[in-house]
Amino acid sequence: MLSAFPRIDLGAGPTALEPMLRVGEVLGHPQLWVKRDDCMPLAFGGNKVRSLEFWLGDARARGCDLLVVAGGLASNQCRLTAAAAARTGFEALALYAGDATAPLRGNALLTERLGARIRRLGPVGEEERGRLARRAVSELEAAGRRPYLIGDPVRGALGYVRAAEELARQARDARLDLRHIVLPGSMGPTEAGMIYGAALLGLPWTFHLPSVEYAAGELRRRLAEIVAGLARLVGREPPPGWLDRVRIDLGQLGEGYGIATPASLNAARLFAEREALMLEQTYVAKAFAGLVDFVASGAIPPGEAACIVHTGGTPSLFEQG
Image (cartoon, rainbow, N blue to C red):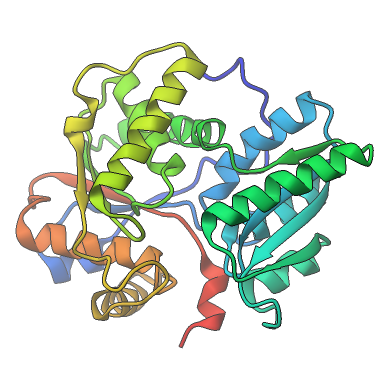
């Protein structure tokens, strides 16, 4: 399906599909599985590696020599862009929003250790951060460089179109009648890519997205926009009604992005003690808290197999209490 798109292999997959039998005992659900996208070989792994394979493929096809990425100090995308650049021979420039005097810790420290050049932007919002990143690209081009701006959501979503094929193949090999997929509801490429891939493959998956960042309307708009972009890029429209299989849940959002909740802290503890899964507590753990809630409420019935995608973010744990 995606063979026409340039891709650089960064070891994104296949990642393991594992049963969670001990958590299943606690929750009264015998068919809970986890897709281990936290266990990739590139710099602690995570979902952004799948997107980076296509972003870097496009960058190389365009003759670029420098990757530009922007994010907050806790950004997994900045860390993994720096790692991908180190692996493949690109240079990397990371633009960090936030307190310009804050020390580099966790992900940001790893970004520096991986050889990326770092520029501090100060306390700017998401929209201004994007504008400054585009300006940096223009300045680099004027200086004779060939920069590539990391982050196009549609091309990045190709990574999880591919992941949907991978997970479907693993479920088939395991004779697993998978019915439910749980993913963090956030920027959209991960969720939209897997939803689009599943729709094209005709898979009977219902997607449950505990929002970790946006209101339901905004998240739904982002998903629809990226899926429409994928349809144009790939040249295949998803079947009508694909959005009907998507359930957006706001029950784990709490006080907002990057802020732990009692449920996320409890989920981080439960899955560590019962399955040895390491969950950073403000993003990934909210998705796992959502899984607990969906099972308790019956949204995921005990007779139907469910898989949650562990999207990574492990280095953030070393900054959290």
